[in-house]
Image 1 (cartoon, helix red, strand yellow):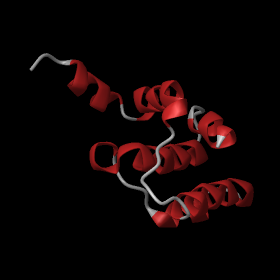
Image 2 (spheres, helix red, strand yellow):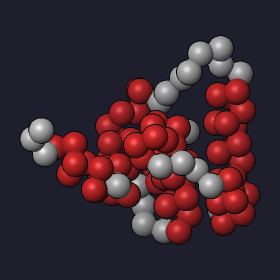
Image 3 (tube, rainbow, N blue to C red):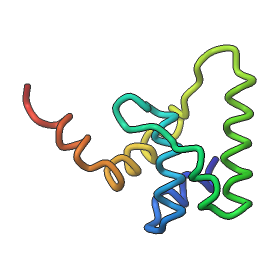
Image 4 (cartoon, rainbow, N blue to C red):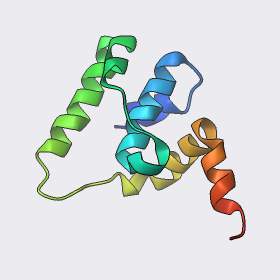
Amino acid sequence: MQRLLTLAQSDTHQARRVANFLLAWWNAESLGGFDITDLFAVDTGIATDMATVFSWLARQSNATYPTEHRAEIEAIIAQWRPEILSRSSQPA
């Protein structure tokens, strides 16, 4: 998980795909989904890490989110979805 979080905060095509994966887990409705074909655009080690997370999630009896990594997820949102942050910080 930590490797995925670190990679998602870098600035590469693989990082964007990993960010999409993590953000879809965090909140797909507001942050966008994950295109499964993005697995073809990351190296095997990264794809394996993503598959590990996916497999782990499949074994959970309840929805589980990476809340212990909230600060890192928020940094990924700021980097890859800045328009979401600007909308959420505007007064209603």
